[in-house]
Structure formats: structure tokens, C-alpha cells
Length: 597
Image 1 (cartoon, rainbow, N blue to C red):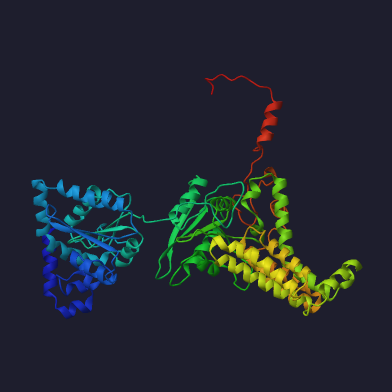
Image 2: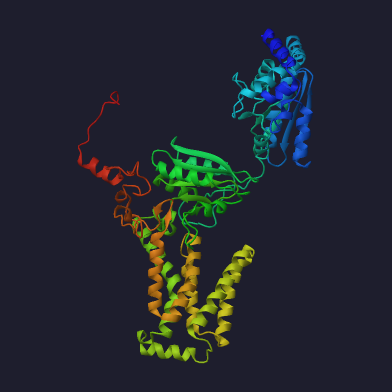
């Protein structure tokens, strides 16, 4: 082995520098050159150089903590680096720094001390060997001899392996020699350990910091059901889902999106139930996203949609773990983004935005009635003001004479036509609604309710609008809040003004034409290549058992046909408890010997 080293060095010295640069390896130009000088993205074997570069790249940030330790027994220095506020202080002190200090104290035997000085003596020769071997290293950080990139000698490799096994008690330990990956771990809450004369850093998992605890979600409240909701921590959210689905087939794939933010994004699905084509499509769409930052799931929601030329949401989002778990069991795919409690679901259908978790916790008749009321309320919020304008302006013959006379008396003195009345009141209510959302929670609801009553009463007394318009707009506003999905209500609010304009121009015929266009538009939409209006268009009769009405559990034996093609059966024959009880009641009871059991 020594002879090979000498022959390699001798041949290197005999080559002219110009010829070496022309024929290939740049290491032949200078045997003592630090490989980090030739590969800027690679760590240097000099501890001071690594720390200086880290301080320079981080701009001397005050939250970067660097603690250097002189390990005389090791014959070298080590340095811990972490970001204050992103790490768990207990993990850093007990499982990283304290364990290393204890190992240093126990490392003072005579033989180990001699070995440490031998490492220092052979360091220069090891660096030369590592520089020549670096050309054969692959992208994973392993060299041609199966070692790690940045390890300059076999002795260093043994030392680092021994150091990792004995001196660090963290749960997860990595080894990295690339600066780009190093910064990603550092800014994710891990602790870096630099060792002098080793061009590689050891990563100890010490993620922590302040996080919001698991609380009840505010956007999707229920009377009966779990009270826990997702948080802004990706790992907490995945843990909540794994508590719901204790199956090894619940798979999680993680990636980073955002050139600057490097946000963690997770793809979660149940292997064996999900359609693999849908998973491949989600991977493909996420892989082509090139954006500087992802701060919320809404950043990638718009980029994952089949089309953005629609006001209807084609991707469902929720902050309830039970809703996401139930969707995963149907064969859907969940996309979790670090920093937000809202999880995306693909593929999504129009029917999902009118379903709530509570529908399945109550009896089927109660759930069916409430779900039907949601659909009816959606139509009221969409069409009631436009129907009022159409009847008052074009179709007075549809109103009984006594009612028509009362409406005429109420509208006497109002200077505006019905369309302008409705448009003014709708605009005022939208302003009040937005103000209530943006104001502090303690006064937001008060502004929405009291403001609407006061302004409505004042507008009637001033003769700007008629009392009927106030009633119509109030019913419309209340109906728009019935939908459990907030974003589908926004679509109805936007279309309401379009319907008003059509009704003011063509009456009921204008409303009918707009409804026809709306239905055609909805039927043309897709979510992850699944028809948005399924199971209505195309008509899938088995899936309609869980659409506008919710049938009993034993009727819904199969998963949605277009969602899960591989494993369609979710409810097997004879699984109902009452059926099993009836069967046991009819069969004669037999006493079984315990030994047979």
C-alpha cells in the first residue's frame, strides 16, 4: 500500500503542470491543494475554513450558535453549530454536546492517545490519497472504495465512524460534505458537528423550537367528532394521520419546494388502495414547480390544478385529520406542506365540498337531511337575489295580486330599480363580511351582525332600498354560510353578481341560460384527470349512494369507482354487526372446549 502511494506521487511529480491540466485530473497540478478549493460546494478539511465560510454565507447572523471544543485526547478540534430557536435545547445539550464531552474524557487511555497522534502524523499523506480518489466519488457522497466523501484517509474514516457510534446519542445521525445540503439541515433545526482535518460534517437531529399545540380547527367545527386539528408542523401532521391509520401501507414521500425557502412537502397515500397513476401524476406536477418560495399550501394548489380558468375550487383542503384519513381510505392523495395546517386532497370532486365529517358520525337519515339542506342552501345563495330581480322586473304575473300590491307599496318612493337595490345591498354585505373576517375576533362577529342590521334599517328608513330586498339579501348571506367548505361559498358569492346582471337583462330566461353555461362548465372540469362532477357526470350509480344523500354504511360497500381502481371493496359481506348478531341468534349455540381454542 505504501509502495503504491509513492509510485503515484512520483508519477505525479514527473508530469509537467501544463500536461496535467490538459489531460485530466486537476489534483495532479498540486498534490497539497485542498479539494474544497477545486470544488466550492464541498466542505474543506480545515475546521477554521469551514467556520469562516459558514459565518460569511450566513451574514454573521446572531442566531447562529457556534461552540468550539478542543479535544486534546483526540488530537483535533470539534465545533457544534446550530440555529437558536429552531433546535430543542435539551437535545443539543444532553444528546450532542454533553455526550461528546463525556466521550472525550473517557478517551484518554495511552493507546488511544498514541493513535490520535498517529492520525495527525499521517494526515498529510491521507489528504493526498483522498484528493486522487475524489474523482471516483458519486453523487451520493461515497467514493470508489465505499467510503465517504471528504474523508482523507482510512484512519480518519475509522475515527469518524467511532466518533459517531460512541460520542453522539442523537436519534438520527447523517454525514454530509456538500454545503447546499448542509444549510438545509442547519436551517431545519439540526445540529452540525465539524471535526478538524475531516472534510465532512456530522448531522445530529435536534429539531425543536416553539410550535403551536394541537387544538380544535376553527374552519370546520363539528358537534360530534374529534376535536383535534392539524398544526403548522409537518411532522406533527403526519403523526396525527398515522394515529388514525395504523397501517404500514400508509406511505409518505417528502421533497423540498422553493429555491429560497426549501419548504418541506409531503405526499401521503395508502399503497394498495391508491391509483398509482394518480401518484405518478402528482409527483410529475410537483417536480416541475420552480418557484422561489412556498409559504402555504395555496402556493402549490394553484399550480397543481388542471386549469385555473375557473372560479370553482378543484382541490379540496382541510385541517381535520379525520377528514384527510377518510379520504386516504377512499384512495385519494394528501399533500402536506410545512408551515400550514391546511392539507390538500387530490383528486377532488364537486360533491366533496358539501360533505362534512359529522355526516358519517350521525345516523344516515340525519346526515342525508343535513347534506340535502347544504345543496339547497347553495342554490338559495346563488339564485335568490337574481330571482327577485327577474320577477320584479319581468315576470310580475308570477306573483299573486295581493303580494304584488304590497310590494308596490313598499317600493313606493325608492328611486332605484330592483337590480340596483339588490346590487347595493349585496355589495354592502360583502364589505361587512370581509370587515368581520379581518377585524379582531372579539369584535368581528359583532360588526358583521350589528352592522348589517343597522345599515339595513337605515337604508330602508332613508328610502334607498325596500324592506323585501333586505330580507332577500339577509337570507342569501345566511345560506352562503351553510356550506362546510369556505371556498365553494366564495364561488357562489362571485356568481351571484353574474346571475344578477343576467336577470336584470333577460329575466328568468337569462338565469336559465347562465345555469346551463354553469353546468356545462362544471362538467368540463377535471381534478387530477378525474371528472369534477362525478358521480353525476358521468353517471355512476354505485357512487351516488354517498353523494347528495348518505346511504347506510352497509350500502356503501365499494370505494369511488374513478378514485380507487385497484382495491374497490371497502366493506365486505357480513361485516355489519346487526347482521352478525342475527346470524348468531339463528344458529344453535355450541360449547367449545377451551383447549381447542
